[in-house]
Image 1: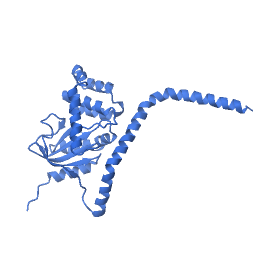
Image 2: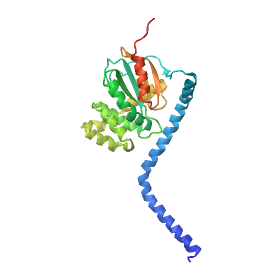
Image 3: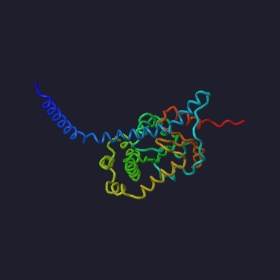
Image 4: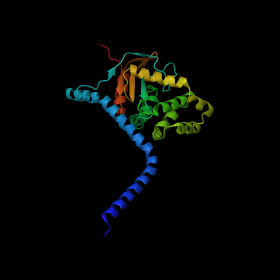
Length: 262
């Protein structure tokens, strides 16, 4: 029978061997671990933001009231004279301004579950003009870089395919993905590479963040929804979170409904 000392030595040797193996594999798992930590941070913030909504929705259900949104004053020049990425017709009756973060799992959920149908039913049919603004959150270290890459795509009329690629490859965000995607989209790589360091693009993203904060955006995704008239977003409502298609449909249909007169 082996001695206790021999057993301990063998166990320690096995432990050291196992630890060494783990150290080599840990390097491959660091990116995944960092991503999971970011998701936890995002979840905590979203829970804080939505806790008040949960309380309000409970009150609404108990009192039989309709879902309410935060009402905002009329917003002038919502697409900044066509400078912001947008889809749909200028003649649309309704506009949606989206505030998003390329490293936000809730934004990706919205893209996967809601945006595609919203686009086919309302944007592509000319009923809604859809405007995208950036709101990279501070605890997402790659979100701002991804926003810069998307806006550099915008400089070459490729914002939307670049955006799709970034959301689909969220876990690979970084310069390699940005350059590979730009190459696949046949962009001018000299211009694209220079754009990634363009202070004007960084300033634009900062303006998006400041504007979002001024209208009450605290997390992503968030949306302003309102009637579009004479390049004004009339008394829009602020909607927070990866809401379902039905929530957007109800809000849009209500804005498109004829105004009742006495």
